[in-house]
Image 1 (tube, rainbow, N blue to C red):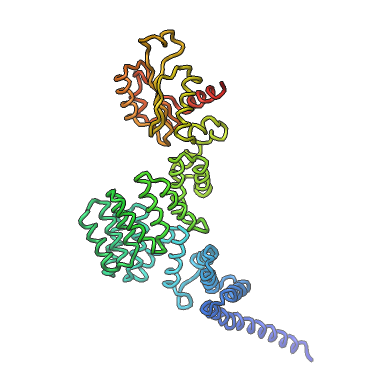
Image 2 (cartoon, rainbow, N blue to C red):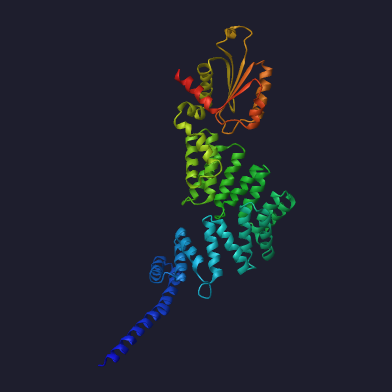
Length: 456
């Protein structure tokens, strides 16, 4: 056998081997890829995931396999993993007959919304309005995201396009009604909401927007009923429960509100929804109002772990950090009304060394009249009465409190007044107190007085 013949046979063998590999890759693998959606359809998602992963291991750039892997993950409700696969497809794939962009973006945009990635979702919905310009749903969702971001002017334009392409889109009519209400077009708002409910009485999201309007109008019983109906829509159930609780907060029924917020939190098993942060925040507010400060701190801490810049959570945690180190302040903030009055009397007598004349429990705290023990005249008939107000409300004391205190001091011929607050004072309150016979006692000084009284 000649050397030339051997070389030719070797070369041919190499070529045939490459051809076989090429055929396997380009004929057999695609066939395997097409088997994945069949498995998904049959409910064999574990097999589908296994096959898709095998294909990707051999061909990492097989974007169709990544797409089907994401679909399989979605079927198993493993949406975080699905999102990773969809993002990879979005960033790398070339769409065409093999991978339809319209179908992909319809699924991808909803997945982004589920994981509160609104900016990315908006980009996809805007693309969908170009790819499928007569589909009202794409305009609706783009408008919905703009509305969530307070871009009401832009949102209204997209919602109006949604009803242009689908006059029976009750969700879009409902959101138009809400936006009209926000711009004080009350007649148009009512018209759109009524139309939304007429078009689809079982579109319970319309009741959500109706409830929002009723809540703003202080029609709380009606709003509660609307939000109860809205909870039948699984997509907005959590939001409707939160709004239901917020209605109870408006009328200071914090125990009822707490039940709603706790329900809303428990609905989010994965603790990923942005609404859950609001439910925790409002629940903390209820606990704070009911002086369950330890429980409020638990909720603020949970929020802080997810979002360090959420509302005033950082400030709240800072405000109450002294509770761990100062038992006197903790008792001041968390005890019952009866115990609170005793604590205030003790602070006046032992911390300030005044003689208490009277003590009254008030909704906002405690009022005490007293005289100065160090003054020899305190036992005489014409003693100088001191005026003292103790607050433990979670909000800073307003100037109206200072003004009311000055008026009361005048009526009782008080020579000096004190207001004590663990939450500080507004700037207007501080300005009003300047150069007047009333002293605003901040938390630090209050702590020192409570500690001095407790040490006696």
